[in-house]
Structure formats: C-alpha cells, structure tokens
Amino acid sequence: MTAHVVTGIGQLVTNDPTAGDGPLGVVTDAAVVVEGGRVAWVGAAREAPAADTVSDVGGACVLPGFVDSHSHIVFAGDRTAEFEARMEGRAYSAGGIRTTVAATRAADDATLAARGRRLAGEMLAQGTTTLEVKSGYGLTVADEQRILEVAAGLTDEVTFLGAHVVPAEYAGRTDDYVDLVVGEMLDACAPHARWVDVFCEDGAFDTTQGRRILEAGAARGLGVRVHAAQLGPSDGVAMAVELGAASVDHCTFLTGADVELLAGSRTVATLLPGAEFSTRQPYPDARRLLDAGATVALATDCNPGSSFTSSMPFCVAVAVREMGMTPAEAVWAATAGGARALRRDDVGRLVPGARADFVELDAPSYVHLAYRPGVPLVRRVWKAGAVVA
Ligand code: NIG
Ligand code: FE
Image (tube, rainbow, N blue to C red; front, side, top):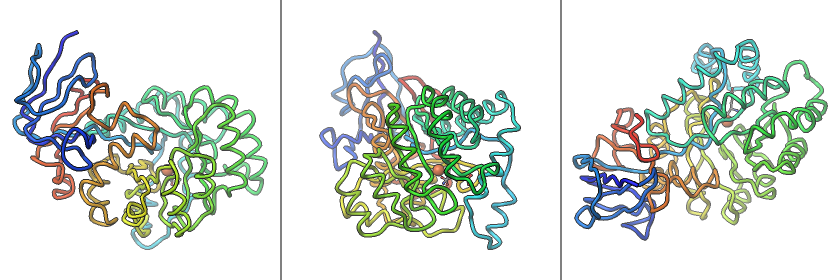
C-alpha cells in the first residue's frame, strides 16, 4: 500500500483531545499520513514518517470533513414564492411540504437523481464528506421507495421519513395513513434505509403516532431519529430519548426537563440554524444544551421549504453568532457531533483508522469559518484520501 503525506498544515483540527490542544485536538505545523483511504498517522510535520508521495498545503488549516446528519435533498419543484411570502411576514407552516410532495410525485427518477446529485455536489464542494438524506416528499409506497433508492445513490446514510406529513389524500385520516406507513410502506422501504424518522409537530404527527412508527421501524432493524420541538414545545424530545434515538433534530423549543433528559442520554441534539434563518423563528439555545452537558450537532436540514442551504460553513457561522456557541464548539458539532448523531466513529475525526476525509481551508484557522461568514473558504476537499473537490 502506498502512503501519502499531507504536510504544511498550519493548523490541524483532529477532534482527538489526546492528539493536540483543547477539545478539538489542534496540532500546529502538522502532517497527516494517508494509506488505503484511511488516516495512518497524524502529528507534528517534523516527526512525520516517510511516505511515497507528498502534498504541501502551504500553511492552510485542515479539519475533518463536515458531517451533515440531516438533509432532505431528493425532491422536485420550487418554493421560492413561499420563502418570499415569509420574508413579507407570513408564518412557516408544515403544510408547505405538500407542495413539494406534488412536484416530487410528478418527477421521474432521472430528474430526482440529477437534482439530488446537484445538491450533494454543492455540499461536497463546501466540505461535506458524510451526508444523511431523508425521504418524505413521496408519501406513497412507490414514491417513498424510489426516493430512498435515489438517496442510496448519494449516500449510505439513508432515512425513511414516510411520516413527514399526512398527504392530501389522507386528510382527516391520520391514523389510516399511519397504518399504511407501519405496514406496506415500511415493508417496501426498510430494505433501502438505515434509519427511521418522524416529524413530531403540530400539523404533522403526535407522539402516539410517532412512537408507533419509530417502534415499527426499530423492529425492522432501523435506527431511530426524530424531528421535534421545531415550531413549539413538544413531548417528542422525551419520546426520542426514551426510545434511544441517535438524534433528536431541531430542538428549538426545549423545556428544562428536555435539556436534562438530553444531557443524561446518548441522544444527540442536532440543531439546524438554516431552518430558523429561513423561517424567522428564534434560534435554538445551544449554550444551554452545552452547559448542561448535552451533545450538540449542527446540520443543514437542506430542503426546499424551511432551510434551502447546503452549506455547513454557513451553519457554523450562524451557530456562533446567534446560538451562543464558540467557534471551536460549532466546528466540533459540525464534524464530530454529526458523526455521533449518525453513530459513526470512522468519520468526523482525524485519528489513525478513520476515513481520510478532510477539508483544506483558504485560511490559517478554523475560527475563520465564523469570522469570515459567507466567504468561500473551502479550498480542497479530500474523501477517503483523494481530492474530490
Ligand atoms: O426539517 N421539519 C420537517 N421537515 C423539514 C421541512 C420540510 C419542508 O418545509 O418542506 C424540516 O424543516
Ligand atoms: Fe428536517
């Protein structure tokens, strides 16, 4: 196996506190040795072992590739007008999901795949090397299944979200729709997914319905994730913790009891600042979660309704400015935190054995991700040891 050394790293974020300074495990004047797509060695450049080939990044900051653990990028249609109306004062409503469902059902597989690839490409170019993708804009057995198949062409982290909203043809018959989701739809979809998710919110599903769907998914071997407390306080957070969910996402309206439960659990609180940006809701209070000892992740929630950003650097900058996070906390949450939310230990860190996924910044420090918002700082992206963007 040939070894490649990436050297001239002015500041290396490893997310391994034993390898460097602080919780980010920062090493200055560092090098990374890559072998067979994995990290073989990290440390001070002057101590790097000999390698077959060398890249010098000229003093750049290098950090683990972003882990975007929450997205909905397989869809068709456009909701620009809905966003514009919100910016004129209209409130966000989960009902907008049905607009995208109608457009997605009408689109063929090739169109859905091309659009999904385009968004996944935007994400990669902005440093996202691990991506989760949900279904949820099909809401029939056949449409949910084909969305999952398209998603599987983009990532291994595929989530079945048949319970995104009750489709128009089931209006007033939510429990009948839940029967479909836990029956025929789950049969068709479980083989194509790793995770099951439910949108627990007013206008979508309550926790009785949500629990039924999540338990049915778990019984089929799917891991549990939950959308909760986006638009108001919800017992969805407690349910997620009780079910051992890997992550509960949004967490905008948390009670003190929710924060305590999260802090005492392995369930990650995944915060999605793009959603608050685009819905003009208050931002979630990351500070309170972190001070209580909860694990926090950041993700884009990329979707056409509530958060049409594909940019993890944007989420980091907003989280620092609006959610009480330090730059180090936000960078950790966007990398190692996302990996925890997906129960992965092979990504989100640069340690021997991890996948060699990393981002080279056109900046000397990770702090610039928040200090220079909106500036395209991602210079090159490495995935499994190769430059991919
Ligand atoms: O995560 N919360 C549910 N799903 C998306 C919104 C989807 C939409 O409005 O189309 C979210 O914000
Ligand atoms: Fe979402």
